[in-house]
Length: 229
Image (tube, rainbow, N blue to C red; front, top):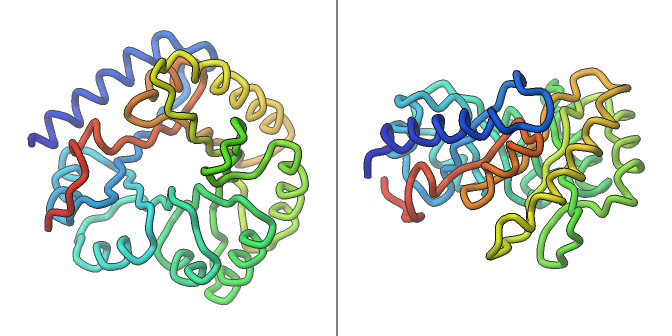
């Protein structure tokens, strides 16, 4: 497994997709290397190859790995966050992408206040209304935004979306397009509302074409998941 080679290949694919981008062609695209179930040595390889952002799904796994990482990197939580892990999450992560309820937002605000931190967050939207996935339904989004805005220790930086795993990836395109439209509508009246996180290994090229500026890639960089130290 040549992590550096894979990383550079992904960067090239991102640039190719950027040329087809339907909006803001010069907008920076952030690559989050998803390190779930990959050990510290592979994480170091990715960072040494140029990864500036890493994403973890589980708080406890991330805590154990971060202790031994010995690298400076921006840390994203991209998995579902349970309220009993909130205190640990605000200590570990620079950006929490998976805020999906008012209850969670309130808990994060309280935990961040306790350590004197303003926590950057994204709201995860379940646009496709998949019952097995986290995310707030679109009709409840404004209420959650209002709560985050009123929270002294949270800063809303954008939206996150996980598309259905269609066998025909083109079926994701209308959903990505809707998410970009929603993002742009919200961005017009907001400061620091910068990130639209959508697109994983199987669909990130289409996500970028339709306006994603954050993509979350694991398999494309690391291969299939296996926890190696």
